[in-house]
Length: 353
Image (cartoon, rainbow, N blue to C red; front, side):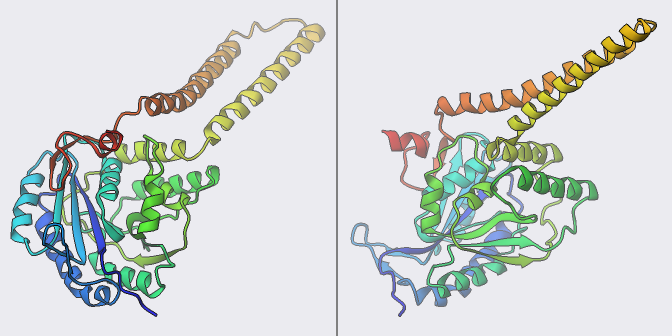
């Protein structure tokens, strides 16, 4: 038997934004259409409008949470303008003091979300809002037993071949060396039950990799596939170098395998160098030292030295993360708010006050 939730917001839609001034008007147009089209099914499970005795306001089925991640264009101004234009909708705006990255934007949005379900998507319309009704229907018709409904691109059209190859390579390497498996083509676009959000917020690591964290927390999930949608903007804000750093972040954050590989390589190199030393000793005893061998010696020393630097770099990456974790700096600093928090203070800090 269906039971209505008489005191909760139904869905929180979290939208991290970085230089999305051009995309936002079209995005608001699309997302509000989707919100209006799904109010009927949501009203069967949640009260459409609930009288709030504290401030005499009505609680909506939806809330839109925009996180301005230190955008350099007019994103914040556009958000404030659209907030006035779409005043009939519950729109909350949070702005960082600088660019802290998408992971910080996702975390801030999840911390501010008040809905029983949370939808995470980008503002560039690469994540189709038209998929949201199916997500909500799947979630509610399962009596919220399916906790995560995520979207997966069925193709890589629109991407350069080099980028597509490196992307597939990342997923294969990551899934091979990590216990957490990530499906290729899966984006951050998903609907998550409040129970999942609570689990994610208990993960307080400084270096966050949401794609793996979504998989790590578990819960019953379902995948919805969709085809490639061309960028609404001329180009993506994610460069190849940014994607490369993000991939390294994901591998190191959820696997200690690089350290094991360093140990294995060191062990193999020790065996090879020891074997070569024995070989040279036997050769000298039997035939004498006819060839000085300086070139081979230099090559070996250079190779081993290079390997040592690489392995020290791997170890250094892990040590650097420990160092940044123990400093306990906040993930972000809020500058301008559409909520009730004090300005220039992050959620992490406020929780400790």
